Amino acid sequence: MTNTNIITTNNLCKNYGVGDNAVRALKNCNIEIHTGESVAVTGASGSGKSTFLTLVGGITTASNGGIVINGKNITSMSEKELAKFRLENIGFVFQAYNLIPEMTAYQNIILPLKLAHKKIDKKYLSDICNKLSISDRLSHLPSELSGGQQQRVSLARALSQESEILLADEPVSALDPVTAKEVMDDFKRINEEFNKTILLNIHHVELALEYASRIIAVKKGKIVYDGPSQEVTKEILDEVYRKEA
Image (cartoon, rainbow, N blue to C red; front, side, top):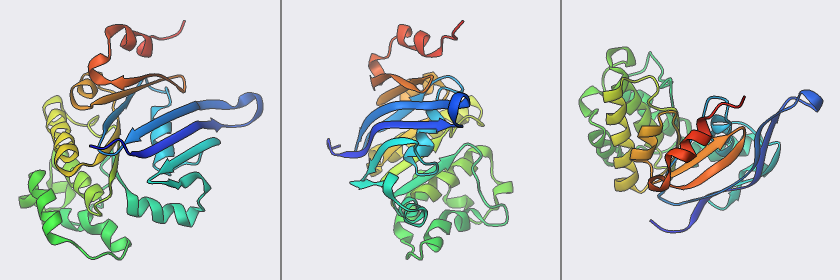
């Protein structure tokens, strides 16, 4: 791992609505994420963690502030430029898998490559599928796969273009505890063996502490902790998840 910043946010803000009814979902967030880091963003429901992830992923646009990814300021890009940048630089994993039911696992995995008109690197994809233990399921439709297998197909799809950055939004929330740990093992393996920069939202604090090297805790749109996972204390977690009177 190097200390090169791959993701930087500068006074990042996101508001919904205008005037007195405006909701400040994210307030002046300043983050630097290094290449190869595994970072978990956690916080209570409505804290702003999902807003942060969608902004960094270029899915939604910031109200104020800047986002620099791989040296490119994505907040200054047009919609067309941003769509191309996302496709080429960021892999996404969602809670709901978002697999196309009529396509086989393999067809779902290579879909981003087809959309980008890129050549398929069969050796790389074979390596990824072997690492994720889905090589024998590639001819199956999503309906023929377990929840864990579907999420691994989604993960393989996110990695298909060899993007350096992987963003995951609650990737194990729909899974049982045993399968959730297995999928988090997959994320850890991808981070360590392929040096992918992973930024994920996760509501399961225990999993976040176990699998991520760094924790960013968000409360009411503000970052209240940003540091090594091993330094997170019970007092910090109590503050993050304490409901205001």
